[in-house]
Every structure is written in C-alpha cells, then in structure tokens.
Length: 307
Image (cartoon, rainbow, N blue to C red):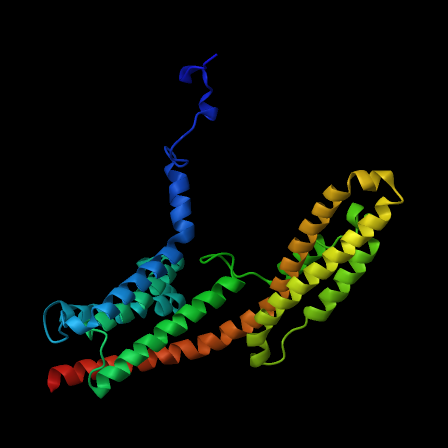
C-alpha cells in the first residue's frame, strides 16, 4: 500500500534544506564560523593579488591603487579606537567592547591586504618597504594574539576562563567515585599520577611555547595507555563476573568517554598558565609594533606627498 504524502507526519517529511524556515540556525552557523570564513576570504584575495602582480593593473600613485592606500591608512587609524575604548570609559558611547574587538580584528586583516594591493604586491622605495613590513608584522602579531586569546577565553567574545573552573572540571571527570572507580579501581590512581605530573606551571617562556605541543603528545599517549589497561582489567573481571561480562562493551565505552573528557580538561589546565603568560607577553609586544607601524606609515605618507 502506498502512503500518500499528506498522511505522513510533518516531522517525518524529508526536507531539502535542514535550515529551511529556521533563519536562527543559519545565523548561528554563520556566526560560529564567521572568523574562518573571513580568513578564507582574505587568503583568496592574497592569492589573486599575488597571481596578478605582474600585470601592473594598479598604480600606487593614482586611481584605485591610490584609494587602496588611503583605505589602508584609514583602517590603521581606526584600529586605535579599540585600545582607546578599552582604557577610557568616556568613549563607551562609540559602542560595546565586543563589537570593537571584532572590528579591530577585521581591520587588522583588511589594512595589510589593502596595502599589498596598493603596492601591487611589489616592493618599492625603502620607506614603503618599511611601512609594508611593519603592517605585515602587526597583522601577523594580531593573528597570533587572536589564537592565544581564544585559548584562555570562553569563545571569541566571552569572558576569561579562570584556573579554578578548569580544575573543577578535572575533578568532576576523575572516576574515583561511583561505578567506574569500582570496576577499574587502579584506573583512578594512574590518572591521578598523570595529572600531578603534567599540571605543573611552566618555568620559562620557552617552556610556555613548548608545552602545548608536548601536552598534545603526552595526553594522546596516556589515552592509549589507560584504554589498554582498562580493556585488560575489564576482560579479567568479566571472567569472574557474569554481569560485567554482559556489559563489558558498554562499560568500555563509558570509560573511554570519561578518559577522553578527563584528559581534555587536564590538557586545558596544563596549557592555561602557559597561554596566559604568552598572552601577557604578546600584549607587551603588540602595542609597540603598532606604534612603529603608525610612525612608518606617517613617514611614508609624508615622503610620498612631499617629494
């Protein structure tokens, strides 16, 4: 018997677009990936400009090329509004900080791209080279800062995470209490020993740089060690208990999920102090870089228009 479409419940009807009629989900997807989309667009523009650099279709002295130079300088000047908005409450009328933080990142990428198109991806005089290198240095510094910022904050525009919250998550995912601790009691000891060994604050800046890479390797190796131990323990106990034998696969899956989650939180705790120190150091370096950029741009504009 063929079922008519009208008899099929609406919740079971196939839709060609899972977001059809639900713009809120579309906005959520776009908002969560807006940064990635922006960087992809920036890379596409850079590739196009590089491939067309020999055609001389833009001139820095006139037309669109000159306008791009003006746009680049304007973006750099507007970039100043974000640190000023952070430091002076009197400027709160210009908008909320999250909005200016977003604008700061967008302008920080747009300014060097406009500068590269302005010079047609070619090096000119010494003063223009210095201005261009300064812009690229500040943009690169900004990308590094954006990466570190996301590691110590809740999302891109969220509040800063604190160490107490991260430690609480580690404690909650340690299977020392309840069924997991009962079925594989030695697992808790092994996890606790690993936690104490890795959750040690880095001593130097070099240690801060190396720690995320070493933690990625150490947590992955520890995961395989713990899972191998848990599997062997469950096989041994299943020979002594029919109940464990009947639910061994489910127990193994539950233990695997707990280990993954626990090691994830342990890694975040171990990396938090490192990223926090790196972010403080980045703050001290990024602003001087930006000041150097402003000085070189002013000199470049003055030289171009006076000589």
